[in-house]
Length: 147
Image (cartoon, rainbow, N blue to C red):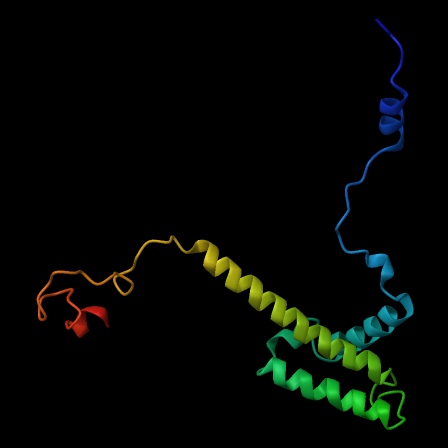
């Protein structure tokens, strides 16, 4: 009948807990690079609007082209963008981040759409009714019924 103190339990209480296993280790992001990306984003927000990039028509293709132009300029030995004075690679990273965000948001939207599906048949999805004659409503030959 020990009335002793459970040292393991005391240690757990005193040290605190943080359950973050399996979560992204954001401290791995290279801070100087992220700062340069932030400068490009700030320049764009001041010139256009903070959310302007989301409103661009044909976003995926246009930001692919823009990212490649910045990468090619960097490959050609031009470190900084002439207009902004900021890194071509930081510009390219912004373009790729915009593409990724758009793609991830699109997938999220698809998932939300699937989650709201009731799973019930609509008239369009209603299965063929067996045993009906060719011209009866709901028969395989009653094409207008399924359109």
